[in-house]
Image 1: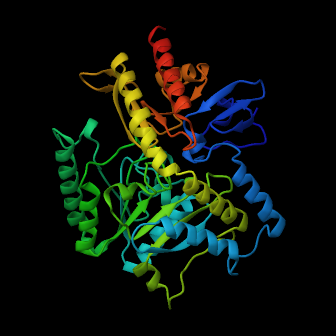
Image 2 (image 1 turned 90 degrees about the vertical axis):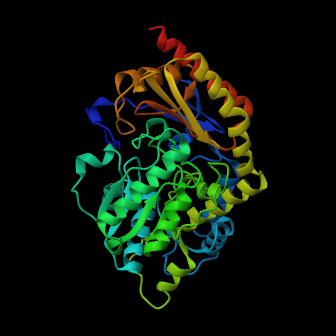
Image 3 (image 1 turned 45 degrees about the vertical axis):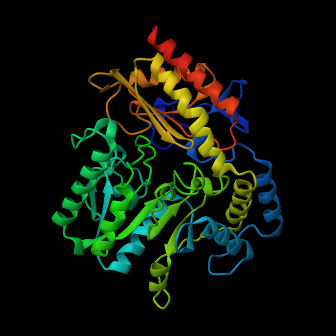
Length: 433
């Protein structure tokens, strides 16, 4: 019988969620004492791991001073959080609108783009996820959109680069980037550049496969936008604040968007928060024009206090550079060795501490182990792989035919090595069934 809690993305009477009793660092455990290495940092948001003392202390201190205040008032902690974000943001992204999560951030970034340009359409990739609110879900390309898709909202989808499964018959990554750009350019022409407000991209695609674009692709999208007066929106909800070994994934290619959405890593998810970074030009548009939007909990003091604390830890512990080094020196080599041992592994890819292991039935044909599907909808084969991982004490994310690794940035090299060894044993276990 369905209980009092309604669980998202689930058929309520077909789930049996693990009842978590606690967590610390890179680990969490249930009421029976079973422990798992959190290789996906919950929703990819626990950059600083479970129960980081600096964030817990910041929340306690702020709660003692001021728990909440309306967003129309100026508050020191809100100003401090915005300044801390702007200090690490690229280019002239100098102003922050706070939201309560990533989906709302996308909604407001798109609204700003439409208001500024006076145009209705937004282009987004098929292999993308931008949130579960109506507008963000319409822009999402993956199957989570299908059950409630109204084919409206001004969303137009395109195909982004995916070298391992090229839809452009590319022979290498460079060719894939060039052909994907040409496809996007043609689509802009078909739709009419003067009708397009923005192109929305995940600089590194997150839950749809950890797709790292070929060099030059994002710069090409930036040039295309500039050519037609289209705003570039970077969705950095999954990738921002060190996940990819730079403060933002777009920094890997020195591409600065006009609007950037963020959430998750900005405060490790300790309090719901997100936001939009506005370029100088976009912010100037609203200098003497009223912005048509707002949220009751925009810039919530508790959330802002956790942002200030989280960004201080990321800086002081040099976790952004450390994520790059762990990806390069630990995760990449270990996953490459894993792939050599297991024919079911078709591809491993990633950057920093964002990685995917793509599983196939046949390496030659690249037939996926499981069909294309939204995260949370697991085929039996992938359910078996995830169950084996859990038995080995590791908890990655299973999505479609892939395992995703987005561990806390505070994870140790030893924990990473042990975690990948757990996945190795799990794949062996499943292959022997």
